Image (cartoon, rainbow, N blue to C red; front, side):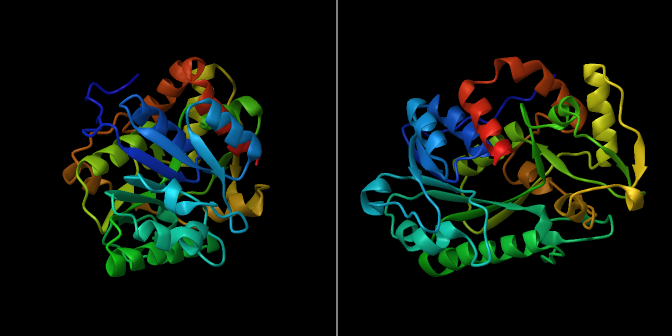
Amino acid sequence: MTSTHPLVEPIAHDKKLFCFGFGYTAGFLGEKLMTHGWKVSGTTTSAKKRNFLKKNGVDAWIFDRTHSIPDPFNTFADVTHVLLSVPPDGDGDPAFNVHGADLAALKKLEWVGYLSTTAVYGNQNGNWVDENTPPAPSSRRGSLRVKAEEQWQSLCLNEGLPLHIFRLAGIYGPNRSALDAVRSGTATCIDKPGHIFNRIHVEDIVQVLIASMNKPHPGSIYNLADDMPSPSYEVIRFACNLIGLESPPLIPFESAEMAPIVRSFYKDNKRIHNDAIKNELGVQLTYPDYHSGLKSCLEVEQETSELLKFTAEEEASE
């Protein structure tokens, strides 16, 4: 079930997008833009995925700190838009460290988008935060993202890189949602009173990115989350109800067995304001809550393109 609001469509045609880190979100964005005549290329760390991308019309290169792009001058020559989604490490963003100067020197570059995370805000004890809330990361994950944001912002301030930062809540969509966790038997219902999570459907992320491309405002920061912050167990229960399975029992947080990285997500508790994407970019969310989002996932998963399904499965296996 989708919104009756019209989707944001790209105004420009025949542009060229380069994605550092051709992951789940880039897959949806790339497929959308290719239907409007864009050329799409990017990087991956997997030779298998590189070959698959090439077969689906996406030029691809292997990239990490030890594998730079061999001929950046020619590779980036006609690039007009860049999406940055390589996870940072202790030294920051590998794309910045290896190819930041190359990107800053591009003459045709119109827009750069960095996919960050709302983890930069840290724990806010359940209070609302917006783009003016100072970053205060409480996890290594959030701290690394703050460092990466600062690296790219330095190129924006000093070299005129047309940077836009997008702080994403938890991403879900077809083949990557609570439905998959329930089907695989890995879903758990954790009860931590007063704790909530924020989430955003991948198609709404794509809408926001395209809206920003249509109306660039270098230096901008946008929060991406839906209108319904909720406890994680409510989402699991709804997913179970949708596919007719019994919900897992509710387990108190203190006694729940969780991997350290999963437990770390429960350290942060905040509600994410999303007014900027609505007021500044004119985006009306297709999936303003997980009810509509998960219903849509169930409806479209059988129709999901081979490219997007492969991307989701490849990331899940890494």
